[in-house]
Length: 574
Image (cartoon, rainbow, N blue to C red; front, side, top):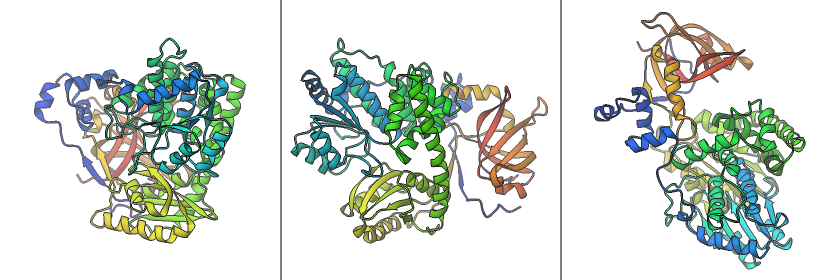
């Protein structure tokens, strides 16, 4: 039977097998587990032991970060002289947690409560990052020192303006560097070429945490906070920002989850209830799909201050009110994303080198989500722009073969501001420059992708027999937690799998539910599976299939059963 034409073609890439000499060295490790570790580049005995035990082998001394000593000295001076300090963050979960964390840490270092002012720009009125008007207003309201968190590394003009009006600037950021460093009193970013810090992939909240650690290390007798008081915020921001869960990020999230599940924050308990999560049993997945989206919803559709106030709330009454507000905003965000994705779909040419949709109907808070859906569906870089009267603000999502921030750098002369990572970025462009921008960014994409076959690749950790999927194997892989970016749940391929039963489920039959045979020498066994957004198979699924999946647990009415999360499937070639 032919594959349904409505389903996207993909390449299945099974990782090379672990070399024999490595298998012989680690005979005590389950062979499939060893294969997964090998695929993650974890092959040295010390690295394997540290990874499985949740340790980090290299130095985590915050003073290895460039300019950390300068930042600490300037902050101590500000605290001693009772200067006004503004913590200037971003409106996403990483920025919000960074803002709350550093505000809490500064107060925990003896700064007067009224002398510390958190500031998060409004996405609609101000856009991403530093802006001149905000800096001017903060100065007029008495600020002497601005500390950025999760932003500022590309804000050269804005930092120059701050210097001119008498503001000292400390930049802490983790985003990609621009061609010029902002002229701050201190610029802390592990991606700086002169950085001696061993991990350059910390999230913004991770760098804010390192600054808090450095302050505490410099004046231990003055600090009134413990690391555990801040690590719950580090876990939320790191996971929600899709920072790679390897190296120090992995350790921070492991410790942060412990802190999160013992958190004294009323806001954590409130948002967990709103997301129908069980306090005390929160995982990285809980953050990724429950807590993070609700925190992000505030900055997307309203004010990020609602999320910041939730995390800083010291009583359940306020916490429940803020959590309810965020839950409502998240539902609005889901509907708006679906509606605007449909609008964008009608504006793009699916086979274009870069997908571009621009309209005044787009909402700045969800353009990134809409762009993400376009990129995922068509496997093309995508830009979605909210057109304003004088300026348009765009959000970009990309694919492995196209570094979107590098592409924006090539047209930077047309942009008001821009920044981001390899696969996600944002920008502001004046409408007068918009036609030329569209032409030039399309030219960049055409040039860089002209000889590239744009077919998504499904990376598979190992090919195994379905009969080998059991509770023992699942428990082995629990040692990999927390899983997420750069340390995903293992993906497996099983061939010649018999389908016992299947049906379309969900709204409009969008998803496919399967019951599969996992026969073995030990007898007959069935295992359930769910294939999200693959309901088209329901009317033409063959009896024998090849299957790509991860292993999860389905809990229903007190019963726990293994369940496969299907990534892709094909008619069996056997």
